[in-house]
Length: 301
Image 1 (cartoon, rainbow, N blue to C red):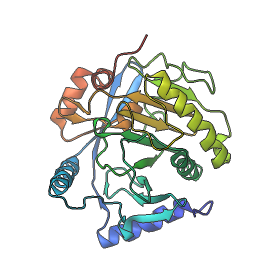
Image 2 (cartoon, helix red, strand yellow; image 1 turned 60 degrees about the vertical axis):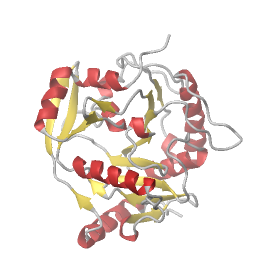
Image 3 (tube, one colour; image 1 turned 135 degrees about the vertical axis):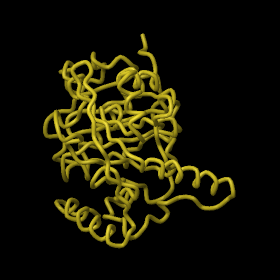
Image 4 (cartoon, rainbow, N blue to C red; image 1 turned 45 degrees about the horizontal axis):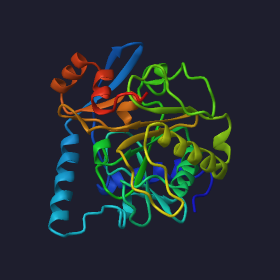
């Protein structure tokens, strides 16, 4: 299993090897910022997402033809970073626009539409303890998931070269309570937000137990079913879920796209991806917060 203090070096070594063999495909991006409501939203502009769209289409076509289309069974050897636990493996994101983008993948197939389990949280915290990052989960296709095999994702912080480590942070600052899920006043769509106690990351097992219980409460607060003690539970709504060492945010989704721009969990951290500058200008004109509202749900009573 994952040896403490080794993950960063393993990521660097695997990245170097995967680039040399061509297993890892990285894509350069232009960068832009959109200032709105005291937030400096970060936007990456690229053509590489077209390859992800093509990969999704190929996966769907293969599935219709009855062919195996799961890239994680098994994961590519050159992309595999480490065994995290007996249930999860760390794998580099093959189509990479963020350096050292890690996938936390179940060793056996579990559906991306199923709610997270305690074992998911154990693997999450073992990785998050190694370096400061943002862990996120796209719960279903409408939440931006491109693969049906269960995988969480971890990207290093900061997300942007300027401003706070996570661009959306100014909208979360007015929720000071620790350990009690509620609403962040700056977010005008249905969500549940909770601050985590200091030092939680120091013990992965304890962190997993505590945050899994909070996750269950957050689901209830946004009107979603909680996990069942009897086994895996299918989610009642698609949703985005973000975890840092300091807080967690859960957002139910109504659809994947704002116009033709796919938004996953990173958008709710204030980090967007677009294919071209025409999309960037539309996002600027409409406003990032309005785009997030368009793909989420109205606040509950």
